[in-house]
Image (cartoon, rainbow, N blue to C red; front, top):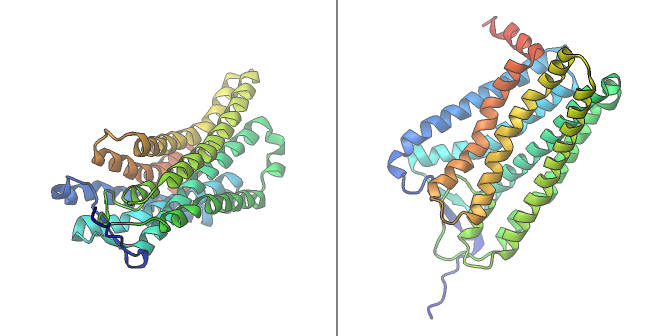
Length: 312
């Protein structure tokens, strides 16, 4: 049997192919991806600017929105610039260290994103179920500490992933069928045993996202119970309206991520470009639509944004 040609990790360079089989239309595919990225940056920078300038918006809810904006811009910026190099200039090479760095920051940002959504659900629970104690329970300092805790959790859970990948041998196949380096895409092209990578990634997804979704479900079950106790129909509507933005953000964030992760592990019969479309929707849709959702649904934020845009 011929010996395997194993490349030393320090000299490795991977090839990111973008959308396999659709190389001829990469230029056209790049247009909606780039526009989505630019719209997301403009919307989130506008949100950060308005909240930063307006003293009246220096509240826990808007601090959470700013954290969400920063994390979403970070996740998309980890991916889109390199993807554009692939689509526009056909520069597909990425070093092992560059690949692991991109993967670490991207997965850390997405896990941090989930932690912020949990904190936002808790914020809505306190606002509706304990409105008189809201200002004492949720201070800006406490929100900052919760954000720091979410960041530490993300780093601790994600740090093993590049370490696990770095120990794997890679042979002749160095082609990653994706627009960016995610954990399973890189692991699958290894010629070594990836059982540890598969199990760890799946367990992290179940534990972290499972707990986060359970906490969000608990918050909203308590909110629904509190809303039904309220006798006034107008109070019902006002209470539920405060949650619709957060619910919309969750629906744009969790389903694409969960579907992408599950198809990566169990969807062997699915076409490669479908995997990659799901992977790109995962980090493009939320940052593009979230500022629009909150700008429309939140009257206070809508008025402040209007105040600055009308000056232009």
